[in-house]
Image 1 (tube, rainbow, N blue to C red):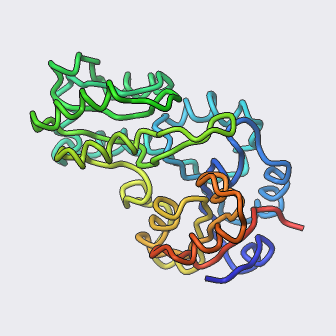
Image 2 (image 1 turned 135 degrees about the horizontal axis):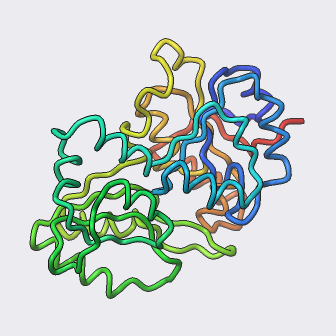
Length: 278
């Protein structure tokens, strides 16, 4: 793992895959250096790859526009929600498509993915009558005991789950809350079968760049388990954003952050403070 900065990466690589939260913005607004840094490297191939369950339309209008991120700098914008749509449209024979065709879903959502639900043409059913679970997002709260009781019941019924966001946590107003990936993990712990969409799974990376260009590509994120592991699975270089990782994991000491990163089995190729370019 090499400690460096965005200046070095911008000279070494031609393809940049960016995570969003912790890298480009803090959930409420973009970092002061974000648009300038993107502008400085707009001659490169810039790709925004997010585990959000929103479709591309929802992501642009509900998230990116609100934080004033100049997404026109990106050659591609990829979301887990959009990836799920592509999977179901490309083939009706794969396991995920066959599950979606059951139509009767117990939908777990913060209600910001209605476009995805509409395009999938699924109906929201009571958990006792559903044919599968569609896990999209969680409303910010610290206690999910009632939801956990429901999914434990469904795990015993062998109801499959599709989860479009493997992230375990998110940050809202400087507080860390469980994300839908936490619910999916608990479902798996209960013995339920989960089909994940999004980083670190390769389904979200499909057809992003050609194999011959992977040696010129780097993914930049704040999460070892999704961004860095996903990049490694895909066969490209990885860079962990120190500031984002520190905030995501609620660690105050810089020394402790370095220790946590060093002791983790998942190692990024690079460690950078943030994406600012001087």
